[in-house]
Image 1 (cartoon, rainbow, N blue to C red):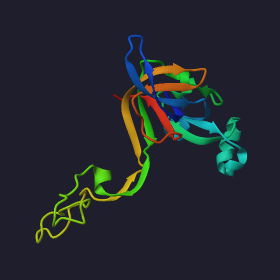
Image 2 (cartoon, rainbow, N blue to C red; image 1 turned 120 degrees about the vertical axis):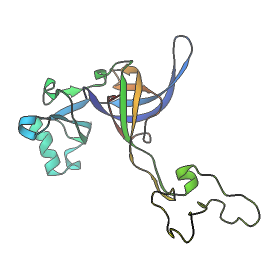
Image 3 (cartoon, rainbow, N blue to C red; image 1 turned 60 degrees about the horizontal axis):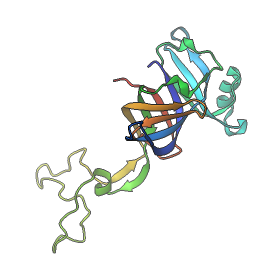
Image 4 (tube, rainbow, N blue to C red; image 1 turned 90 degrees about the vertical axis):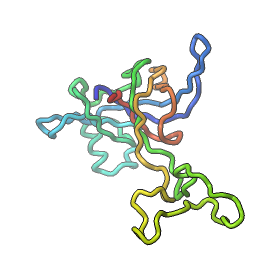
Length: 209
């Protein structure tokens, strides 16, 4: 990983190219992210950069959390994440990573937590079909249907698609294109959709592909 930043998903919109084509984009408020700590192989066993995002008040943090920011001389932030960059030594503690670390045309991976749907049935969760809506079937038209064989093996196989908790999981969308970067407003416009509801925190880094 060469470069990365933390941001907040603002929502989706569309922009037009010079020849009139429509590009759907997700607007992400990216940074500024102050560098809180630089980890080294000699001291910590691995090289990484610890950065913050979204400034907050001191009373919103615990004493151990607040101590990290005071040691670095950085204003307290709600979000604190690590990035394992190839060469974190190019940054200094207290420096800010801004949206212009990326440029139009870059390929990135976006990580986020998907929308939570709670306990959901098989139709919503796994996109299964309904059962036949004819006499003798109801009133179970939205149930999962057959569980499999009867006397052998007399159990339901693992990993069968059934009802359960849907959403609220970490998801990475890879190899997305940066369409535009607005450094003045700390905005990055990424082609297509990214995981999570509007207002959720996402991380952006250069793609692994």
